[in-house]
Each structure stands twice: as C-alpha cells, then as structure tokens.
Length: 221
Image 1 (cartoon, rainbow, N blue to C red):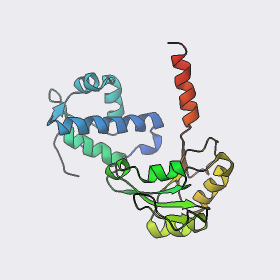
Image 2 (image 1 turned 90 degrees about the horizontal axis):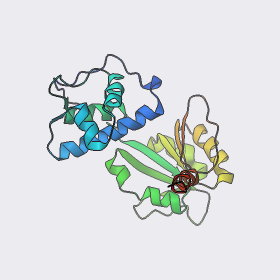
Image 3 (image 1 turned 180 degrees about the vertical axis):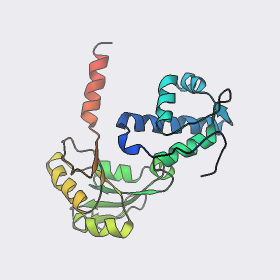
Image 4 (image 1 turned 45 degrees about the vertical axis):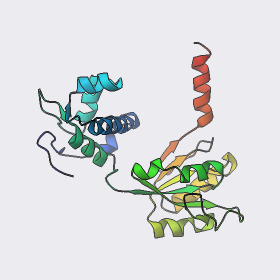
C-alpha cells in the first residue's frame, strides 16, 4: 500500500475486538470512498462523507479511530489512501478463494456472479453430491466437484471461505465437512442455525427472515 502523509498506520490491529456492525460499516465506507475516487474527489471530511451518503459523521470518526488516526484537520481524509487502508483492514488486499457447497440454482447463480471477482473474491469450486452435476461447470466455468473431495480441493486450491447453499436438512452435515476441511469462515444460506467450533466464523443469511422483516414494516406503512 502506498504511503500518504494524510493517513498514518495504526500501532496495532484490533480486528478481533471489532463488532460485526463496525466491520459492515467499513465495507460501506470503502464503497463510498470508491465512488468519490471515481469522481476525482481527493479529500473529504467526515461531515461531507456523511451528508453525501446519508451516514453519521460521529459514527464514521468513531469507527476509523478504532484503527488509528486518519485525515488532516481542515483538509479531511485523503480519499484514495483511506480507501486502500480500509481495504487492507478488511483483508481484501489479496484475493480470497471461495467454495460453494450446493450446486443448485442458488449456488450456481452465486458462482456466476461477476461482482465477486471485482470485489476481491474468486469462486474456485462448487461441490455437490448429485452425480448428474459432478464433473460439470457453471456458466462462468466454475467446476463442480464431488462433496467427498472437499478437504482435498480446499487444500489444493487454497480455499479460505465456504458458502453453504444446500437444503436445511443437509446444512449441519455440510457445515461439519467444511470445518473438518479446514474452512474457518462459512457463509450459510440454509434456513437453519449452525453451531460452529470456537475457532471458526459463521455468518447466516436467512432470506425468509429478511422478507418477513420487510413485510412487518410495510404492514405498518
């Protein structure tokens, strides 16, 4: 990462003590800064950033202060340098290889989504237990492997993240296979709660709950 006088490196890396909500906001800030950089905006203050993207300026300053001192008084944040620093904090300064377990419609759609490639992720493999799917490829060319080869392919392809897109009835077993294969980060789309080991990270995405939440709000609009 290039150095910039407007951005100083933090003395320590406090990622382990940072909440999931804070990490999510860092991702939002990266997107905002990327948009500003694309418009040729070299510097921006927390107040201007908050106003432009409907954020909270005090929250921005608090989140950034968790990782060190940024910006210059009276000048603001150096847009490009701050974006690169946040990308590094998020661990996106190198490509993260991903495996999707479940080569059905959802899994195949995720494998073919081009936005992952531009966002620092590469879908390296799909897995399934359906003999008709094993040996095929997604439209984007992602190979479908036998789930029994999960540990082998994870090691061979240096995969770090697993995405579960199987039915709820199979999710617990698939999650166990992911952790046994050495995957410490799992994104679960199956509508079931999983119990990860202490050294693993699990993120659940329950589309039905999100839809029910939206229904709750529009029912009271």
